[in-house]
Length: 450
Image (cartoon, rainbow, N blue to C red; front, side, top):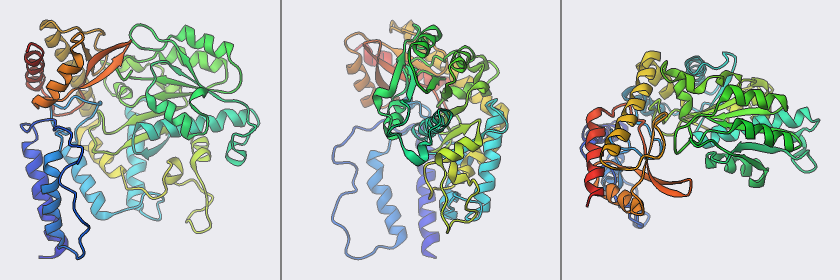
């Protein structure tokens, strides 16, 4: 058999076996500092591709986590739809570079169509540009870079040409409960963590719009306001319509970190949570959360395509179409895989109604999880807004989390919110069903009672 065909057949067989059994395998695996069985000396001679695949499967098996399965509730991780997974396999086999249409007309067409579908699904301006990035970190960085370009240009400063030395001091105004990627983006963009001006939050974790007005009023200089759709702990969504109106009074750029919460726009029963989203300037969203596209996949969306390209793009004499904005000018990377194939496939598989059903079912199941735990005496400190559940076990919370992870029935992580430790459960997988929630809640209660 042809070596490539042999390797691909073996890989396919292993992938099918893994996915067929993923719902019943232990969800988590203990972390071994030495890692799975990949260690050993560098081989002196080569190995046939099929044998390499077998060795890879054997080495990885002990350390694989069933994060694609229905009872993984950590880190707001979605699953991977069948068509999107297959599309990713094809993307790897086709090995397309999605920087320009010249390098891959197919990759460019898939991204343009999938991007158009996304902004329609999320209720964003139809003229918005969409950069296919790795995830929320990259999407937030791109959105804040576009904001940096815009507000400094308005102040008469060319940051792309002259950098930040001598520039008007720029501040990022964001919730005190913002996602950590906002601070990291500030570092990567040369602004520094201290450029972030925090705004207080309401009891549910959403931004206090009155305090936002105060912070903008009492500060000075160009500002980028970073709002949040989906608090990482409570799922609470900022009042976008009111907050954008306040930001506009001060000439600020408005970026929305909607890694998972922006998907509420696709669900009729939850759309009200992101009312006013179309008024912002840029948005971050993840495909590997509620859209259930394989890792890695995120979207940096901007209402001002020329600003988007000006902040990220570059030209070189050897590049085809030099001087014209390319898809690669909307993201930080030049060489990048064709993420648009999997996104296009996922949206074709689900359709608008299917995406809505996935999001609304995740919301219902999160509420069911909270109700089951509360009925068993577990403290639930915040109402379920989207798909996030916080659960407390007093001073035993971390002990219970560790025991749940070791048990393997489900996987949940921990967090600190309002000065206390909590178990954090995120329901994002399209295959999760009521029986998965009930089975997992029962396991958590059984372990907590020990």
